[in-house]
Amino acid sequence: MRLLPRPSVRSQRRLTRGMQLVLAGIVVYGIGFGAPKAITNGSMGLFITLVPALMERKYDFPLDPWLGLWITLAVFLHTLGSAGLYAQIDGWDHITHAMSASLIAAIGYTFVRAVDLHSDEIHIPKEFAFVFILLVVMSFGVVWELFEFGLDIASETTGITMPLAQHGLDDTVRDMMFNTLGAILVATFGQAHLLGVAERVGDRLAAVE
Image (cartoon, rainbow, N blue to C red; front, side, top):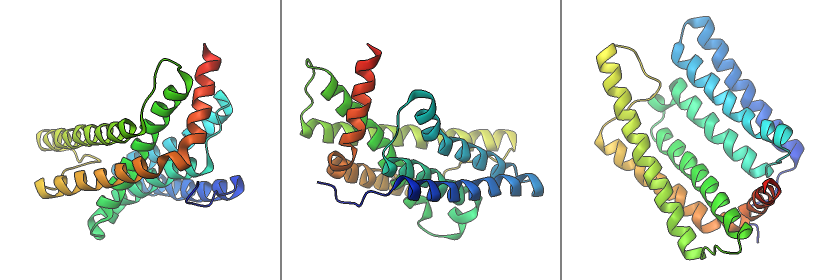
């Protein structure tokens, strides 16, 4: 049973194009005003939002409209945060962490479920899938925080402003809490919305063999 309405492909494309235009505008702003952080984050974000369409055209792998919007929105919110909203709006960082964690959890669930559906020798109970998603997201969150810590050290050593940075131990703990929240939401509701995507991934795995 789906808990959220399914957006039309046209609506998904319109929303995606709108966010991509904003990201492109951030890149243009960075070029025009000499803001390398805006150029880096905007370019990376814009590239990631193009990945779903690339997969559909090159590999004949259409994504669910919700998943396409999910990917684009997660990148869009992070890029806006890097453009200044992290410093201006309290809690924006936590929103982006929850969104990114939910996206990672969704990808992890999709591939685990696809393997479960594709292989007769592997059976993954729902309870284990729930725990697996939490562990994947928590592990990724730890690696991400270590990555930000490494960028802080590099920034202090070289004097170069990095696109990401830590903001203290308390902020790191809150980030991990919101990572866990995003993972729990996907682990709880993922089967209703991601089963179709997992089935298509399983079909692609079968076609490769």
